[in-house]
Image (cartoon, rainbow, N blue to C red; front, top):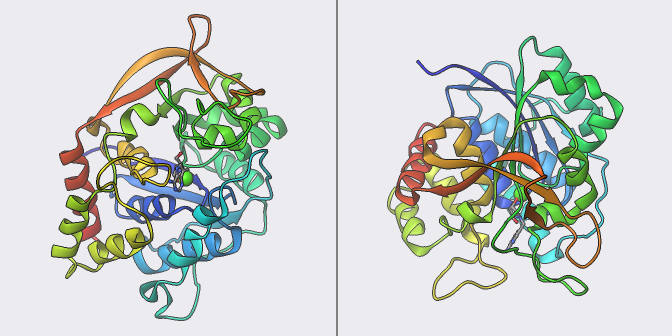
Amino acid sequence: MSQMKSVYFNHDAGVDDLVSLFMLLQMDNVELTGVSVIPADGYLEPGADASRKIIDRFGHGNQAPETAKSNSRGKNPFPPAWRMHTFYVDALPILNESGTMEAPLSDLPAHRHMIRQLLANEGKTTLLFTGPLTDLARALDEAPEIEEKIEKLVWMGGGFERGNVDEPEHDGTAEWNVFWDPEAAYRVWQSGIEIDLVALESTIKVPLDLKIRKRWATERRYEGVDFLGNCYACCPPLVHMENNSTYYFWDVLTTLSIGKPELVSKKTINCVVIPDGKSQGRTVEQADGRPVNLVYDTDPEAFADYMIELAKKA
Ligand code: AGV
Ligand code: CA
């Protein structure tokens, strides 16, 4: 029997963020203590609604986790075309069949909701962040005592050999979740929290390609597998070569590394975050930087199998 983990999930309402929530709800070794939504690579209202509908439709526990909305703002906005994905997922018929939202909505802003949930949990909580770190940076400023209640932070962010930002006035070396709010990542780097960093080095191994799409189509008789196929229908797959819109399983790999740690390879490195200037949001390996557990590799077959295995439990 693997041990039960308490997990608090802060996401930014992209397709792979919402699919991550769906996956978390299928893990029998995870207890979800709360969900919060930050409007970075997605929109807030449909992001919170879709989260609650996913909990309603696909949650198994008798106690549904609360969803909280963030009031944080970033520095470098995401392209609106990507953010529109939130509306597509929220509109999927399977999430709107009942016409109601039963899962509770918190009236606290995300960072305060997270503080409350961390302090209310007797043991330590794993933080899963699949968007920018703004809410965590604010929570640490307001309530530094939460640091002791955090088992570790598992974050999709960063890249050492490459970035994925293609914007004017930037040199392209940053990953988007760091770039949206570089100062927040810089702040979290000053803390003593243990960090598992799922950076572009590993996520590049798991692109959304036609092969996995075909597997979902073939097994669409399973409601959860059909849901995966429908969610990703609005994301362009990798066919010939990568471009700026190519979609990877960034957040899903990050999330699945909690349910099945042996899916990924990690090594400790020391690194810093560049908070401003033309390389803002870049993560750089540096001998006197803070240590992180860098997730640098995964097995794409084992990843796809586990994703489908979880979806079949829905
Ligand atoms: O940089 C990866 C992060 C992940 O948290 N997001 C998407 C994932 O949710 C930003 C992003 C980078 N490239 C993108 C992104 C693309 N082509 N479409 C949508 N979002
Ligand atoms: Ca995300």
